[in-house]
Image 1 (cartoon, rainbow over the protein chains, first blue to last red):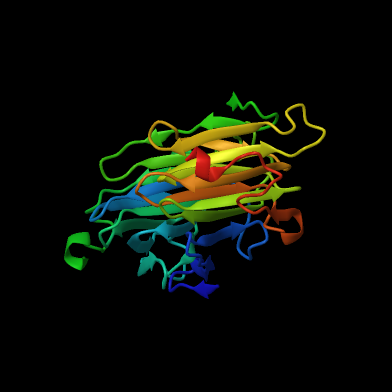
Image 2 (tube, chains in turn green, blue; image 1 turned 90 degrees about the horizontal axis):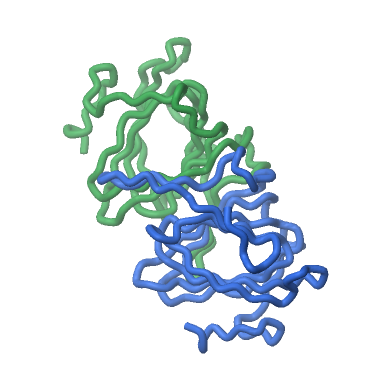
Length: 153
Length: 153
């Protein structure tokens, strides 16, 4: 498990068991070190070149893995009480070299862009089921987030 | 939730929230009717034309969904005490018309073939983590299972 520059964010290498018929890919187990509880598993497909940003949860913790495609994911710490308040982290996710699980605690705003020519599939095993009241969306060009998708990709 | 011809197997339609940027796809929540507990989430990729068969679990319950590609899945009831002992069920899974979650209890042997030109990705939210001692593999042409993959596809 590796620490991020943002407090509480962590990434854990995942195993890909290669097979000429198609790989088996680990995601998360109930005895994984940072697993707390299971709320919901769902998928978000991102077509090539598409940006999905920004999303913020006040209660839900995300556990993301990317079995298909490649994304750039950007995290922004919006927790006033955090030692890394307002820090930005930019990561790439995708097989085979960057196949890991990303834990994003509540209070971290995040967005992603599908890079490469194949559509991406993000799998999220969140700790609570989707609850509209704890989920917010910020516009892609929000003034509150010092990151410009157009300039940076 | 729909019942299968095999006792204890069930399939539940899942929601695909279409979006021109890429769909959001439901899988399973902790308040889904047939959810019991979370053990492990993992992925099995199946390349076009490939058959992965047969798998049997003595304890683990599978909850499968197919966000990518299309498969034919064959189930065979090996539970001597079951009212549907030795029954076979053949299903197709895949978006957009057959996007559902398939619950396979222990004691049902299963195998799948990727049909179509796109690789398939099976997501499994099983009720216990992978445990080699409760998992068996039967050869693809096993005499114990009255199904011939070559003849039928």
